[in-house]
Length: 221
DNA sequence: GACCAGGCACATC
DNA sequence: GATGTGCATGGT
Image (cartoon, rainbow, N blue to C red):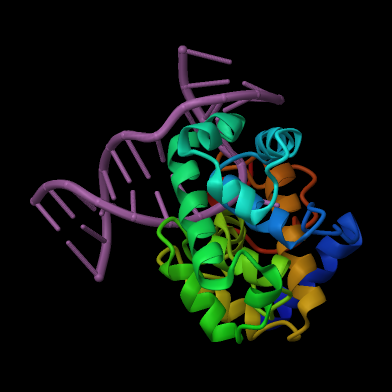
């Protein structure tokens, strides 16, 4: 079986097991954007608390959040961890939104894919995963989001080598599955679900829906 | 108490 | 260009 077939089978197995994940868990594009920064290396439960704080403070919109003093912003997002650095990162992103597009999501939504990605990556604190999460889940662009779980799961099943970088993994997956935004959306969400439930750094691999696939020998216990 | 979580920038070699 | 480190809360 080719690696492309294997990848398509992984998608089907996960979809069969977990069903549609209905991502991103947010009410609108702006909430996706904020959540994408807050969830960097952080459990989503903690992010929910931070977003809840922002909503309660009635600052969950681009201009208001941008005008909030850095210290106040940091305090509100505290539950999400790394709150000082994330406050700066959010501020950088908001500055771009407000100064370049008047804080208008609709204005940003008009950008072509390449320009949107380029401008997101130019913001300090926005790396490839955060940029692509915003591209796919806030602006419905055909771009696959790679994360730590993706690298771990695909590495563990020997579909990528341990030195593969972000774009190599992204290329492999995008060239293996159909170019459909809904499939990209679901597949990444399904990978996160598998990662959370079965693919820890110290794996036990019991009950994993991919147990039928070949994997590295040292993690079979 | 140890480990982990939906990264990223920066220092150092 | 690779490798290491700081950033931090909250759940298991």
